[in-house]
Figure 1 (cartoon, rainbow, N blue to C red):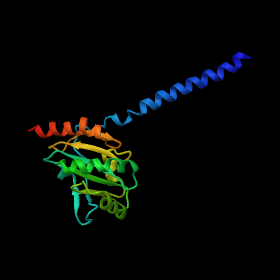
Figure 2 (cartoon, rainbow, N blue to C red):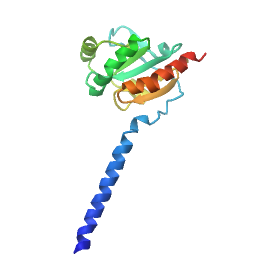
Figure 3 (cartoon, rainbow, N blue to C red):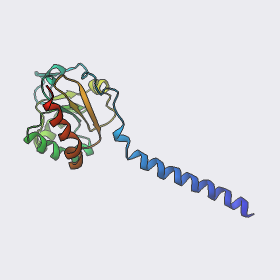
Figure 4 (tube, one colour):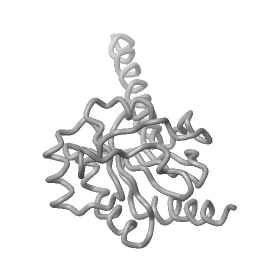
Length: 178
């Protein structure tokens, strides 16, 4: 009788251990490297959120070190990082945006309410550009070097620690390259 009781309990205990290990590993999912690292930014030419008559294209990312931030007004995590993006932009970091699968009026309202850290932000209503960038959620942030190559991808919201220990040191290093 005791054996019949212990077997389900042991199986349940093993499942709990597997769940805990999985949750701990999931914490590091955002560190999964992108297959685009070291490759040229995907080719795109998309109307901007600010002015649908003006295009933002991949060639504009060459010749400077910049960030490309994938965002949406419906994204709760994007709100968490937005203040930090504004701080970075005000300190001289060049940030471009790709507004992902969002209504144009909502995106404009968002930028008006929370500030616009973007030099330009593409309005990727269909999500096609996001697919080319390998986006599977928002927010995601890419560091682009002077040659237009993707050098780093950050999945999830940026926090102060990410900015100070990963993003800004990498930007400084890339700016120093000839």
